[in-house]
Image (cartoon, rainbow, N blue to C red; front, side, top):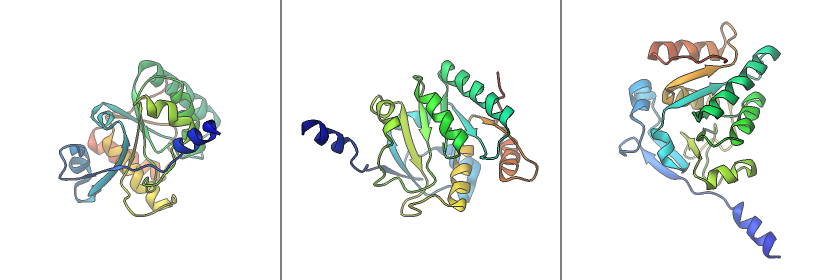
Length: 196
């Protein structure tokens, strides 16, 4: 019975810390890059110090071709082995696989769900890394949405891009939302990293 109680306690809802844009810990880069579109408040859960580290953003569309998927896995393994802090929504199937690869390493990971994180249950696969201080959950959403929507994913991706020191995009299709985001990153002067 004790084992079951311990398991239930570990799955209790989480209570994030709220950072307003007036808080000294709020990332200035969001205001610099997004201006008036910067989220006025962030929900954070986990090791807040990870926000100050140089970050590589990963974006992978669900419609990524097979050869790009293989290059993505190679790139993510390299980032993991180099100890690079990675930030992403980890929402598409390829991004979820990237997260599994990264969780096998020792580097920091910033997960940005496209929804509210208050009351969220920590994913079991993230628990060990979270407890070790290697994982931070970050969301620009305070009250809604509680489920991922297309608009929420777009806003989340803009936040991830704005926080990035460099970015890896697995595949760019002409005219796609990812291509528009790549244009935005280029305007900001964010360097792109490629496969090894």
